[in-house]
Length: 337
Image 1 (cartoon, rainbow, N blue to C red):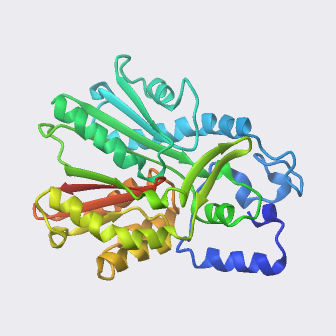
Image 2 (cartoon, rainbow, N blue to C red; image 1 turned 30 degrees about the vertical axis):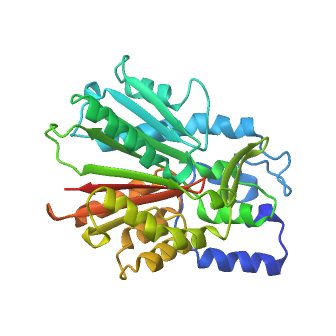
């Protein structure tokens, strides 16, 4: 939303250049204002200076209104003709763009009429790697209880948090982030449904990057810090992290047949490609999701996994997944057919 920044024509031209080279063609938002003229705005005030600028309360009202229906849509699409709602024993909701109590977990449970005795938990404010944290929890539930059927729903409404100050962090956030929702069901190995087998998880924190990716609350919405150094940090640290993760599973990097990498941005994907010396096309799924959806935070890695699924051919396939978030945290998983 260039109007919000009140940029000079030279600065606006520079920002358009960055948008053009972002690797993103399409993004989605629950806010219609971004594609409408000012007299049709519904979320922002119909004033040139956007005053009174939306408060945190106003943004959370929109989250409450839109997040639950979007979550239910994703969950039903995931479960359709595969798992009945009566079978679900655990519900994990994931979000870092909205909070309330009662929250998204209870809203989803009510709208889907899930069992009243379902085990509910929420993963909040963990950013783009949160879906992997939820998968790790679901894997633990299923390892403990062979009858567990865990529904994970990741929903982020990132565009609720547009900030009009023309800082590098704000402009990078408005360039990259989008709204979206994804769901996945995790079961024990004895379930008749066939899917990917989750083998191993591994996560590490790079302390020197903790100020380069951050997400904080303010009275006018959530504030994102996304330093230009993040791709450099990833490029320096990702190869040894991958080697440590695969060695824990008794594998080597050469054993990986498919790469499921969170597309935090075009430069991040390029940094991973260079560091791991990947061939052209090996991160195609990540580039495709970035191009068609942008960075939706936590649901994004599940979109990449879905993009990869048709490519998986047989028992020799090994998928290595990774995502990045505040900390700087790197979370990984291994999966196989």
